[in-house]
Each structure stands twice: as structure tokens, then as C-alpha cells.
Length: 80
Image (cartoon, rainbow, N blue to C red; front, side, top):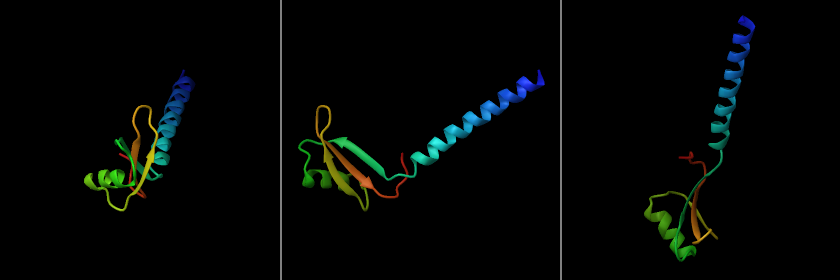
């Protein structure tokens, strides 16, 4: 019985470690803040990022499902 309790505790700790690692590795990449912007071009995407107070950002437009998407990439920023 004690062996089963110990194995259950080990499994629970392993699962918690996997979840913690997922959070750590996902926060290591650059943060992309994306939103639909119509029309999406260099000017409108730059103004969108600037209006939302992003600093040192890089803009990119990509096709979305219904509308083009403007992404403000902030290198080194933590993910929300």
C-alpha cells in the first residue's frame, strides 16, 4: 500500500514538472502581439503597434482566416 502511495506521489511530481517546463520554455521566445487590422500594411501595422505602446517592436502582416493580422514582435518580452 505504501508503495502505491509513493508511486502516485512520484507521478504527481513528474506531471507538475512537465507543466512547469512548458511554462518556462514557452516564455523564452519573443512575444508576438497579434490582432486583425484592415488594411494591414507597413504603415497601419506600425501605427497599431505604436498606439498600443509597444517599444522596440518589429511589425509583420500575415493572412488570417477572415482578415489580415498585424503582429507586433517585441524581442525579449515575456509572454502574457
